[in-house]
Each structure stands twice: as structure tokens, then as C-alpha cells.
Image 1 (spheres, rainbow, N blue to C red):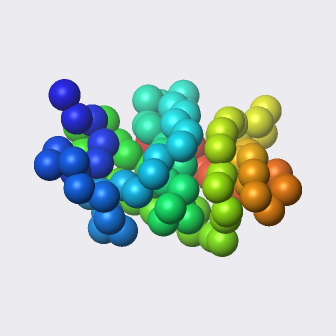
Image 2 (cartoon, rainbow, N blue to C red; image 1 turned 180 degrees about the vertical axis):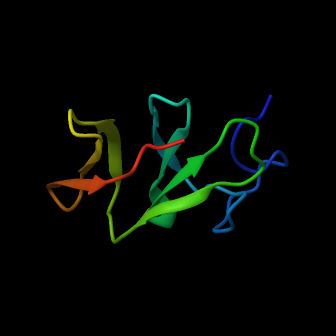
Length: 93
């Protein structure tokens, strides 16, 4: 069962597509956050949704790994740029 991305398996930049997803996290409400590395964005997917919402769009190079910190920020390891990024994301219903 496909829970995020194009059920046909094609990659791309549209809200229903992903391109090289490299990380996934769930918040306290069950919303899924996907680190869509080749599109340089983080997509938030609501349960049962057929498309994601972009909550972060920035320049990244080979980001691997994503986690929520104690303040609810999304923290990303941006591998090729040798940096750690932090983004405030509201985790509300």
C-alpha cells in the first residue's frame, strides 16, 4: 500500500510526488514528514492524504536523516554541505 508519493511510482516535484526521499518522521498527531532530498523540501502528509504540503523548501545537498528536537523543530543532517539544519515546524492539529 502506498501511503505517500505517486502510486504509479514516478518521481517528480508535484505535491503528490517525491524524488529520492531519505528521511521520515511522525509528529505527536500522526502527521508524516518526508525529507524529499532531490526536491530540497520537507513534505507534511496528513493521514489518508493523496498529496503532501511543503513545510520547508531550502537548498540542501544529499540530506540524510531527520528528527524532531525537544522544542518540536525538525533537524536535518545536510551531508554534502557539512551542516545541520533546524526548522521550526508547528505541530498542531
